[in-house]
View 1 (spheres, one colour):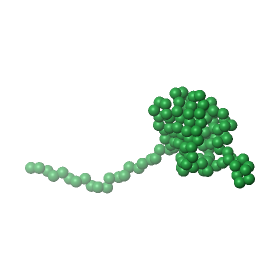
View 2 (cartoon, helix red, strand yellow):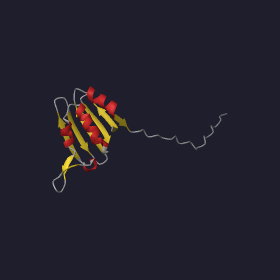
View 3 (cartoon, helix red, strand yellow):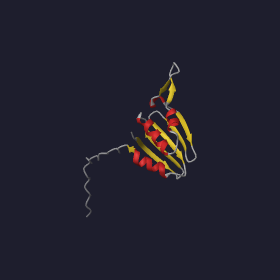
View 4 (spheres, helix red, strand yellow):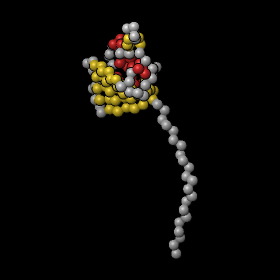
Length: 131
C-alpha cells in the first residue's frame, strides 16, 4: 500500500503533503507514523468508531470529512485534515530526513497530465513587400 501524493510544500520546518483520499491511505499512514516513532495502536485507533449498538467498528476513510486530527511526540507535530476529495498533512519538525526518506520509498505520485499540442490552422499572413 502506498500513499498517492498529489502535492508537497515546505519551508524547512513546516512540511505540507496532499494525498488522494483513498482507503489505502489508512494503512500507509499508520506505517508512516510508525516510522516517525508514533505508537501504531494509537494511530489505528483514530480510524475506529462506534455503531448504533455501541460496537467498536473500523470507519471508512470516506466517513472522515472536514475534520482534523493532531498528533505529537518529541520530534514531530502532525496535523491531518480530511477534506472531501483529498487529505492534507502538515508535519512540523527539525528532523526531516526520516520523514522524507519514508515518502521517497513508500509514496506514489499522480501521473502528470499530458497535453496535446494544438495544431495551428491559421495560415500565415504574407508580408507586404516594400518598394
